[in-house]
Image (tube, rainbow, N blue to C red; front, top):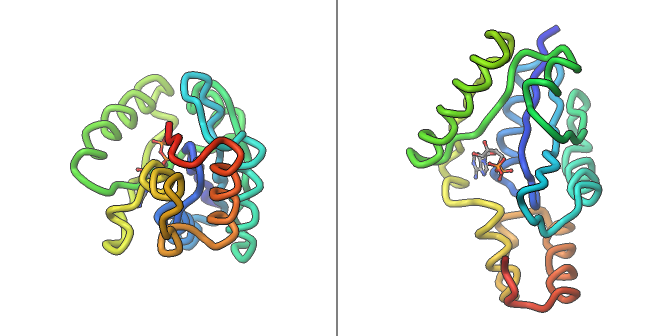
Length: 167
Ligand code: ADP
């Protein structure tokens, strides 16, 4: 049984993430998508909200489980006895950062956690959670970026916090 973890902020989940999730779920027997509770970032959505959105968006994928974690990915992966991390690559700029993290994780886990990269589907290469938040904060059209229910939650959030206040 081959299992993998796809860690990330998912603030919020986009069609780019969902494309990676679907493709990884076809390669691995079990995929855990895990929301990182990163105390150094100020997310728009709470961890609980992000977990709920991912659960809703991956309902049709029976081998995908949603979870969350704090601290080091290598410790979390060891607790779950999972040895592969999935990351998505959009552009060369992602690569430099991701390469460093992947090598660090491999070294500090004594080779127990390796990273598998999936390259973005071209139609999502431009897509990031930050772009989506920026467009939504100005009431722009994000229907091609996120599922409708995520879009509604984004607009609601910006109504609460004030449109145009992108962080
Ligand atoms: P991070 O975990 O770096 O804060 P995200 O939660 O936004 O970032 O993304 C999690 C993972 O998904 C990263 O590996 C990122 O490169 C990848 N990813 C994000 N958007 C896309 C996309 N449009 N296509 C492919 N991969 C993506």
